[in-house]
Amino acid sequence: MRTIEFLTQNGAAYWWPVLAALLTTLLGGVLSVAVVLKRLAFIGQGVSHAAFGGVGLALLAGVGVGSAAGDLVLLLVLIVFGVGAALGIDLLARSRSARGPGAAGGADTAIGIVLAVSMAMGFVLYRLAAREAVAGGRPAPPGIESVLFGDILSVGPIDVLIAGATLVAVAGVLWWYRGPLVFAGFEPEAAEAFGVRVRALERLLLVLAAVAIVVAVRTAGVVLASAIFVLPAATALRLSNRLSGVMVWSLAVAALGAIGGVVLSFEAGWSTGPSIVLALGAAYGAARVWNALRAG
Amino acid sequence: MAVNTNKQSMHEGVPRDGGSEVVFDSVSFTYPGAGERALTDVSIGVRAGEHLGIVGPNGGGKSTLLKLLVGVLVPAAGRVSVAGCEPGVARRERLVGYVPQRSEAGLDWPISVRRAVALPLAAGRTGFTRGGAEERARVDEALGVVGITDLGERRIGTLSGGQFQRAMIARAVASGASVLALDEPTVGVDAEGQQRFADLMRRLRERVGLTVVIVSHDLRAIAAGCDRVACLARTLHYHDAPSGLTPQVLAQVFRHDVEGVFGAVHIDAHEAADCDDPSHGHGQPPGELRGRGDA
Image (cartoon, rainbow over the protein chains, first blue to last red):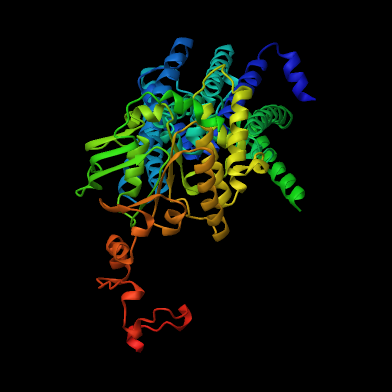
């Protein structure tokens, strides 16, 4: 098997990307239950695309090319962009739904606006940065394909550390507030009447999701990051009738998807990010078939 | 019943307004940006253990009144108090058990009935604290009171409208609330469910002794064992025993609704006994009723 050859004959070179992929997908698994049940999937898309706008801006400012410190500054810029986009979409959606009919319609439009504008801005800024870098004799920014689809083979120990720390922090916060979070998510109005601070918890969830998605963008890329925040829970919801069971399945599916995707990418020579998403997609398909067989 | 004694004894020493558990004192409310007031100068008291029904047309301010009671909204003028506390304090103390409509819940969530009933208890905990045996006993007891012990492990989204409503009442009982606030309890509940609801209201009065406020545009919900009825169309028109709801009073309260459907109408509602016009068809089976135009 080529996977074993890659992992055993190249020192740690391939272990970091594999670990980063696993931790990032687990991060998606932990948050996807909330993302799917609270219908935040499109906010995820908005955030990941807004991050692209942030990438463009950071590159133009000369941040994040070549050094580890620059890399961290870039991450912070992206987190600020992502959290700003998530809260901005939320605010836009609320103000729109207050005026127009249907909260969902309001959110759709708001995400459409943020997504399109930040993508366009990111692309323009990226081109400008590339042109300036060439003119100034500096190293060119990473290829646009690696920004959009992720470049997992370029990740190192620092990325593993960031993904691991984010996973622990996000899982810890979700677990700590699990009681009020579940009530606020399941029945916001009733939860508010029973003294739960629903708006604060909703914002907390948005911030967690935004940070996690930005971290995932580094490994999975802009286009694919939002997929790992949807597929694990969408699959798990077909496999259990209990919230705790769904959480466990979501993590299991995420781990399986990451490992399956990594093996697929080594064996077939495909890009890792898309391979993981394909593996997760296959798991979702299998869960649907299993459901259909059980029902029929 | 044991479930409710803690909260009641905790607030026994609190001075009440003239013995009333719930007090609305000259309450007015206007939504931000709205020109018209949603509520104008509403005053009403509900005694401990009393069941008050509030009936009124859509847009008449019923939901606003309920939100003021549970402390989600704050009155622009006047004062609301629950068991001697500000509604905001009562909300944190979980003194008011809000029973929502089914449509407000995330019915696709993988949550069992037991878990849904325990949510207010779990919402007060963070981190390492766990529910334990006492919490389970409270949930069991509340499920027993509303008669759905056998549904405890079912997924909440699979319950019928009536079953869901009983689960939500069980939740309010388990939370230790001393006031039950029901929002449109007969919406999405079939005829059998409505009869069960009336029976449950009676049982709650006998076994738990909760103060109940029911808000509805449906008279059947109000008729299910309310001691008094208030009519609300922006301002409180009238309140009396259910027998005080004469056709004339209802016609007046629901006039805006009727006009919305039929245009400006003259409502001539009166008692059959006082009527000597044969074209009105009093006393005939409904199928034989003829409109005035046919007479």
